[in-house]
Amino acid sequence: MKDILQRLEELSITLPPKPTPLAAYSPAVRAENFIYVSGQLPIHDGQMTTGRVPDVVSLDEATELSSLCFLNALAAALPLLNENESLQLVQLQGFVQSAPDFYDHPAIIDGASTLALQILGERGRHARIAMGVSALPKNAPVEISCTFLAVPQRSPRFLGRYRWFERKF
Image (cartoon, rainbow, N blue to C red):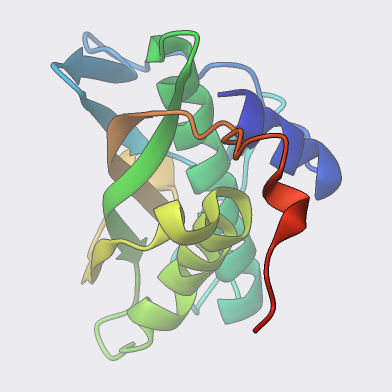
């Protein structure tokens, strides 16, 4: 977890507080080493942009909102890690409330995918679903759900005190 928090600091990203469920469910559940995060809406400081893409919410704004959804998913998953664990993103499911003739859902969900790679590095590579839907809870333009794997946090390996004596033949 420390590696993720350090990377967020390097990127000047403030992690939002753990999301509060809107109904009778948990924001995230851990089963063995898998962490399943419920659908997260683009809520920031109790506020949320609403409306359908691209009629009310622009493509660029919706892309940014998908990044916010991923941050909320990360905030839901991190408290379920043990001290020396980190996260690997396995799958990201993205839903876009869109007009019937809109087909750029993958471009919007790329906001979340790109941010996952920036924060998690190679452990941010994932399988993905990006689909358009006619409506989302609370009239949200985007919703993201994630499946993470809890993995042992990488620590530097001690290679021995004579490591610097590498031979160059």
